[in-house]
Length: 442
Image 1 (tube, rainbow, N blue to C red):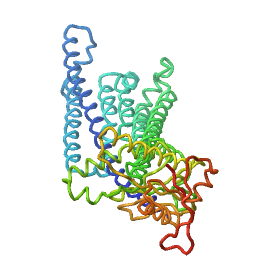
Image 2: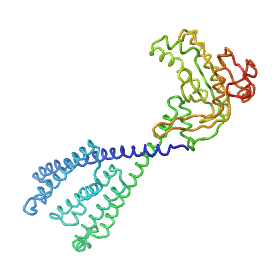
Image 3: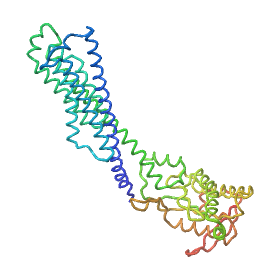
Image 4: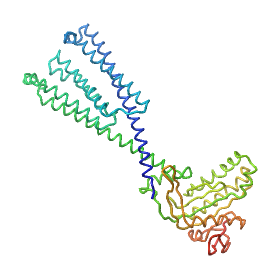
């Protein structure tokens, strides 16, 4: 049974670890944005103070609150939260470098601390303004900044918690100032408690929407990961010997590559007299020779909807009809074999290859296909008598002095539509009781 799901589970665990690191990096960006915004507000407050001295802003900025001017308290509040965010940024950076995690409780506590900043600002403004003006003052809109930036936490619960804290704290402020609101209700529609209840509900809904956006972002990230992992699984199984077209088909087919019985055409290819060549040449020359020889062969097999299953030193095993088939597997295999022979002949004529001969054997039939191996290493393979007989047919090339031999099964699968062809007759095959009808293709 295919164990790809186990690989997928292990790979997803690794992905979860990487995702956790990416969430921390995203959290660092969020904190940096907040720190910059708060620092900017501190500078802006100083600028506002300068403008107030010119009489452009209300005198309430100079009102005393607990012995200090209002603007001093406001600057202290802004500066303390800005310092808190810069310190938090350093802490997150430390956690990322050490590849650790931030405790869940602290993350929720951090949400509570940050979201309480607008609440404290409103309470402070209520000391110098009437409660209604404080509840509709600019600090109220800062709640939405925290809710929007909560998306960067990539956590639905934290986004919802941010909206809930903002909604609850704002509602409690309105409830706290309810007597003052009731006194002004007849002269100011903003003083109606229902107005502030709706506003609190909007904050909660904003947190919910931010959470839903987070879920969608994570869904897209996980979908991208699964798509990439499927590509990696196929690449690990088939190596670099599958055409991009085959890869795309495998990715889009609904079923997994489970073990199954399929009708395939098997090709064995072998280089003649390779051992003497390798003994008289340097290893680098041997490798370059094989690369020069195999590279066009791989392309030819791919172009004819085949898969090179494995290299065998001085040859390879190719499969036509698995894992995908276009219904013309034997024809594709013969066409690929002829194209390979033509390519080798042409390269020899161009003196790109030394005078060599290759042998190719083809046979078609039922085989068991699927992945074998462990979670660390897998290989897509084909097992059955069809493979053994194709190998034996290829070896007959030495005996007959030929380069391309096929079985009668291949000829019949093609509808006997091939010329020129030479009948080699019934030939005994090692390991088989009955002789096999063999044909030579020039």
